[in-house]
Length: 240
Image 1 (spheres, rainbow, N blue to C red):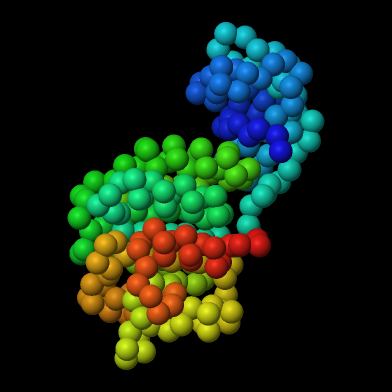
Image 2 (tube, rainbow, N blue to C red):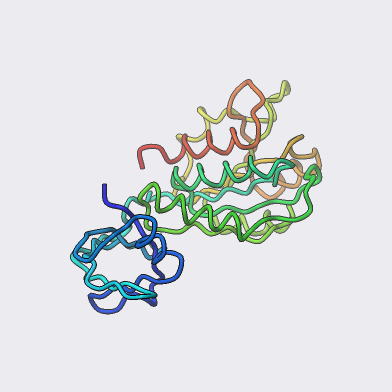
């Protein structure tokens, strides 16, 4: 597999790609690429280019486009994760990285009743998203939204065909089984709500139900937030 590098669409004109900034440093000083080497360029909007490096100067490199690939390695399904931010920041880092690798379209950090941190590390998570996009060979850069309160995310969920909130299995049957429910619903655009440590409050679950968000359980066992996020992405996106 070729090495992947990112450049914004503004740096792609006609059949020439310009690589600069941190990506240029990575290209030349870390990966040691040279003139005539072939690499893959992605624009973060779903297009990839096979290019050949033509010039390397002090601050940038130029490459000639050889082939263009639309929606390169991107799933047809658009999945958004709305996830309660975690007390341990490294666990949310891990969640972002793996969700992007699996093909998630966007991530919404949530502030809920049981959320402990009050601030989100959006810039760091966006950088992790970029690195994961390149590492796994995707061409679309998933957006990390600004921190949303739960009610705001509920309103945002109206943009999706299918709306799911993951909740612990309930002895009274309030949480339907994922495996039974998911094969029968529209999965073109899906948003999945996942709670922080302690899960969602009863009030939040009630609010989600009132907004038409379906409450599902992934199984009989209680999962950590990052585990539930990866499991949901895997069930929805593996093979797409």
